[in-house]
Length: 242
Image (cartoon, rainbow, N blue to C red; front, top):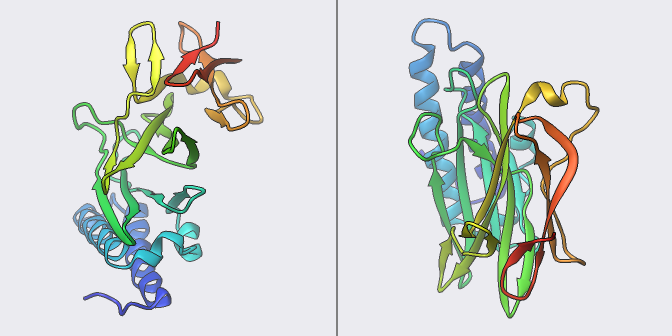
């Protein structure tokens, strides 16, 4: 069953399911709770994708009650691209994240379900806390920093670049140039113990006025440092500043 198309009804329906995800996640060691957790995650993923595809206005809906239930939402400044991320709580040692990516094209909304699940080859389990919007040469790019938690001792951060071309979300535009090639993302992993006594730790940041991406420097022992690596846009690519 699906809610009627009012924003309140949609949010209420999604909230009802997400609360079940969190309930069974907190009780997953109990008998058959893991089966219910898997089921509720499937339902929530399907409904979130359905509503965000069918109703374009959801891309600007605040969904405050869902955020309180730990749904992470990031929206681009131009309102054309949004990510929804949640921890399925199906992970054994780290976070197990599902993402719905929503974008607008020709006045309509399109949503994609990305199950970036721990254990799936070549997939990182990640969530997007923020989206930076970068427009150059009449083309808009979305720079999305992400976080990953693999275990109590190992975490990761990175940045993925997206753009919309001819009504299709492109997740690999080659925009970052390094000595080894041209890529659409940055990624690094670090030892969580290296930031245990920090009040806050640095994260990837895009500075619009200077058109630079700043990423924390992690040393060869996977220890987070307070130094940064800077990539500056040179007209075609982001390139490392020496």
